[in-house]
Image 1 (cartoon, rainbow, N blue to C red):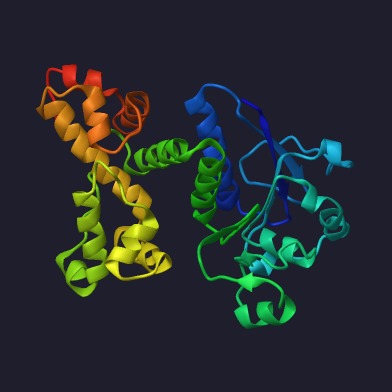
Image 2 (tube, rainbow, N blue to C red):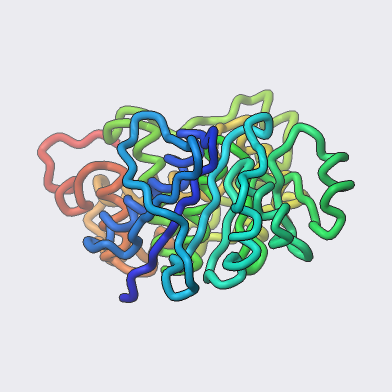
Length: 316
C-alpha cells in the first residue's frame, strides 16, 4: 500500500480537542492495519501549540514535490482566528496541489481567505453566518457538522473532526475500514467490554420523534444487509442531516455508530448463544468477511468471537 503523508497546519489557538479528534483516527487506522499507512507531520505557525503534546515542528514545505498528500489546517474557536502573515499566500500557491485539503474548526476560514473553497460546499466555523455569506459569496455554506465536497473537507469544532476523518479514511481505504474505526471509537466511549450497554431512547423521545423510532426499527430489521444513512433517512421521512441531529440530541451518537452497535449486539447473541459458524454469523450481521467481523468484534469486546464463545462464563 502507498503511504499517505498527512500534514497538520496548526494555527495559533488551535484546539487540542479538534486536533486530537482529527489525528486519532489516523493513528488507530495504522494500528488496525499493522503498519504506518498514514504518516503525520506538523506545521505549527507562530505561537501555535497543542496542550500536552510534544510536536516536532517543521517549516511549511516549499515546492510541490515536498507537499504532503493530505493537508489539514487546524484552528480553534472563531474568536481566536486571525489572519497569519504569509499563510494565505502559501495556501494560494500550494492548496490546489494536494490530494485532500481540509479546514478544521476556524481552519476553514484560512481556506476561505485563500479562495480555496469558492464553488464548494463548506462549513465555516463562525459566530456570524450572515457576515460569512457577505464575505464569501462564492462558497456554498452549510450548517452541517462536517462537509465533504470532492477533495475539500471542512468541519465545525469538537468531535466533528473525528467523524469527518473516519469518513475520509473510509473513502480512501474502503467502508470496512470506516466501520472498523467507528467500532473502535464506540468501544473507547463505552469503556471496558460489556460494561456499558447501547443507550436506549426514552419512550417520550420515541413518541415525540417518530422518525427516530422508525430509523431504529429499520436498523433492527435490516441486519444482514445494512441500509445506508441516506436510505434510513428517506424511509424515516427526513433528511440525512435531520436524522443525524436526532441521534445526536437523543442518543449522543451518529446513526452509523448506533447501527453498528445494534449489529454487533445481534452478532454477540449468536456467538454466545448458538453454534453457528463465525463466518455465517458475520454474513448474517452484515459483515463482508469473517476476518473483518472478528477484528470489529475484538475492538468492541476485547476478544475475538471464538475466544468469547470458549469462555466458561459469558455475559451478553
